[in-house]
Amino acid sequence: MKELPLKIFYIFSSPILTAFLLSYAAAFIFIATLASSQMGIAQMQAQFIESWAAVFHFEAAGLDIFIPLIGGKTIGVLALANIAAAALRFTRRNIEGFGFAMVHAALALLIVSGFLQGKWRMEGAMEIQKGEPATAVYKMEGGKKFLLATLPFSVELKNFERQNYKNSDIAKGYSSLVEFRYAGKKIEKLISMNEPASFGAWTFYQSSYARGGETSILMAVKNPAGLLPTVSIALILIGMAFTYAVKIFKKSDEKVRNNS
Image 1 (cartoon, helix red, strand yellow):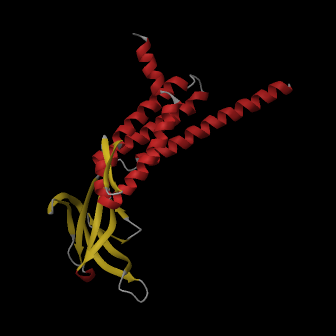
Image 2 (cartoon, rainbow, N blue to C red):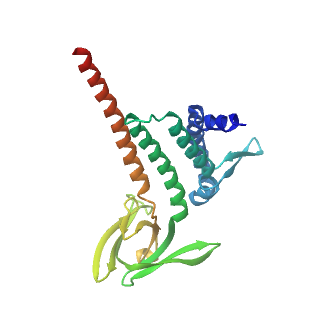
Image 3 (tube, rainbow, N blue to C red):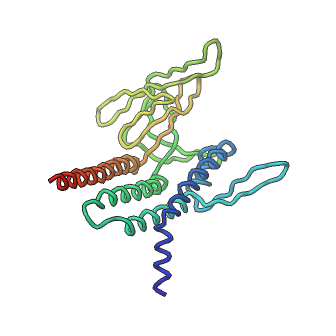
């Protein structure tokens, strides 16, 4: 009976499982990207990335084909278990293994941050107009508009610009100059299609416009776990640098001893 838990531990700590999860995740992201062209990014994220299981449907030779897949949440849990088991199995219990353990902990934090971002992330839309400060963030569900959040500050549209392709009425890009107001302070920021702006705990993206630019539509996102991926990557780099530094120091120390 004692051999069964040990076998399970070796399976979860296996480098083969690591290689499989990495390969599967790459193929899964590719399939999810294909699905997004059919259903949109939001629906794809809900059905593939934020699910335990998913089904990819496509038509070929006049036939409807359904492929069952392991969902993004399941991949994350398996990867987390693999990282934890591998750290327990392969990390050396000395200073040389400290950097290795840090890298594994950072990878685990990176996966956990994905779960937290999916759970804590708030995303809605704002309609801002000239001369009318707005604080309401809405969300569309079932064709109806619901109040998602009320901002502790206001946003007002100061100016809207649209750029068209040369000799065309097709929009090349558009941007909004907005004014954030909080506690008597006024701060102006430019929000364009590829350059969001942040204020407080919220980040604003240029989404669309209406009434010829008199109304600008922004996507408002609040993500309390947004910094965790950056922290994770920083810890991974520090852990790798520490590991290599220890190895270089040991090699140089061995050379000194051999020469002496």
